[in-house]
Length: 121
Ligand SMILES: [Zn+2]
Ligand SMILES: [Zn+2]
Image 1 (tube, protein in one colour):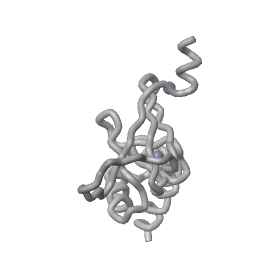
Image 2 (cartoon, protein in one colour):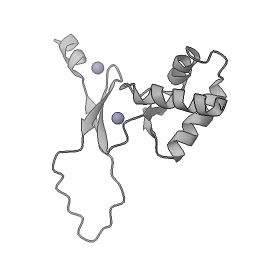
Image 3 (tube, rainbow, N blue to C red):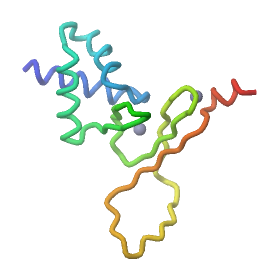
């Protein structure tokens, strides 16, 4: 029973955050509800959720982050504050992949986010 509670809690944290938290941030958040939860448990639950496609793991700047939005989408990463912004997969991609079989693709945009652009001026 306790396992289910931990799993639901962690899934909730990841799904309700648009900030693509890392495992430690998820752990800090989980502790607010289950104060004796361990970082190891958080990692184990994250792995299970990832294996069952409930969440996605992203590698950004050598760090793993978790995404509760599993529909195909891309990311914009700010070079200055490292913020990750979700980008919809609705734009038209003109591929020239005649003899290739594409399994998957991932596009990462990098640059400056709105706030960091304002700071620059
Ligand atoms: Zn920024
Ligand atoms: Zn995302």
